[in-house]
Amino acid sequence: MKKILMLGGTGFVGRHLCEKLTQLQWRMTVPTRQEASARDVQMLPALDVVETDVHDEAALTRLVTGHDAVVNLVAILHGTQQAFDRVHVQLPQKLARACAAGGVQRVIHISALGADARNPDGAPSMYLRSKGHGEVALQQAGLALTLLRPSVMFGDGDKFLNTFAKLQKIFPLIPLASSHALFQPVWVQDVASAIVHCLQDEHTHASVGQTYEACGPDVFTLRQLVELAGRFSGVNQGRGRVVLPLPAALGRLQARLMGLVPGEPLMSLDNLDSMTQPNIASGNLPGLDALGITPTALEAIAPTYLGPDGGGWGLRSNLTVKRKNAGRF
Ligand SMILES: NC(=O)c1ccc[n+]([C@@H]2O[C@H](COP(=O)([O-])OP(=O)(O)OC[C@H]3O[C@@H](n4cnc5c(N)ncnc54)[C@H](OP(=O)(O)O)[C@@H]3O)[C@@H](O)[C@H]2O)c1
Image (cartoon, rainbow, N blue to C red; front, side, top):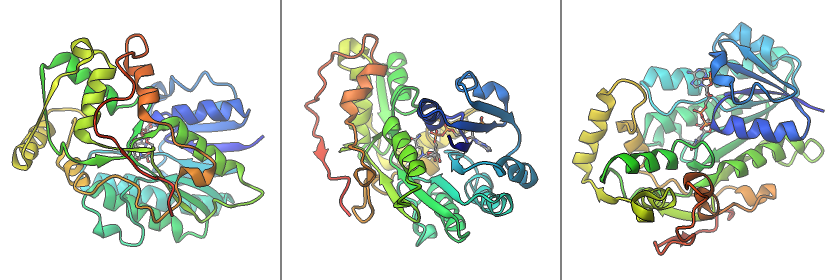
């Protein structure tokens, strides 16, 4: 039995990963800023929820100590330059020092597709630049490190397809910025399986020092994904709403206005900046297949959690879906 510290384990990926590690009967520690956020995982056996501040380096060192490995899932999607720096760069720096002090070598860090540790500042958004600098911080620390860079993830509880499905239940028309942006969505369970695989390869250490691009089998435009979310959730008798692509200037105005609404924005200017770069596998790095995982198609899963009765609106859409070999490298 292993003992894993999972930073950000209360989130979308964390919840799925906790379930997988529970099946393996491993022990887990999941820190959270607020115990209430851990309600989906705290009932799992062999899982300890700890309310703490992971940015406090002394507290982080105490947390790390005594674990066999750390999985870092902490991230934000929106925020200021300072907030991205604190969460995506300073926290990995603190984690590296905490691991050295606590005698833990093995770290699995979840970054994002589009981050580039060789040229972090070349990325188009604060989110991606900070993710790249976070990768560098961990790579320089001499850890037994594996980096995973997922494209956008879908699955039960996602904030991506679920949000677009909910919007179509409310509004008759969906004005959409960056509608041509490309994504290669990956099933959250495939990403969780990849993390488990990395944690288990203690005999071959094949994943140590590696960076993997975690992508699904198909490439979609943002518009296609919004349309699929509408159809799979049964909106407008399974036809979904009409999507109205916005010209770039209007899209930026929309994102600016959304940023003024209190709470987590639906879309920020920084998100639009991220989408100027195709969120698809580069082909230069190993993919999920290098970890023994065949990526699952979105159409096989999304109807099971978006649809009121598990879908039934025609699984293979007539949309143009480009097959892409996510595993070339
Ligand atoms: N979801 C996607 O489509 C996607 C795509 C590409 C990459 N990724 C990456 O995959 C990883 C996991 O993503 P996810 O979707 O599971 O994220 P998530 O659902 O937003 O969960 C992130 C967790 O991090 C913790 N957290 C958030 N802000 C924090 C802060 N300022 N300080 C400390 N802890 C904080 C939260 O825990 P508490 O609230 O309990 O403290 C939260 O549960 C991230 O690195 C993300 O960038 C995700």
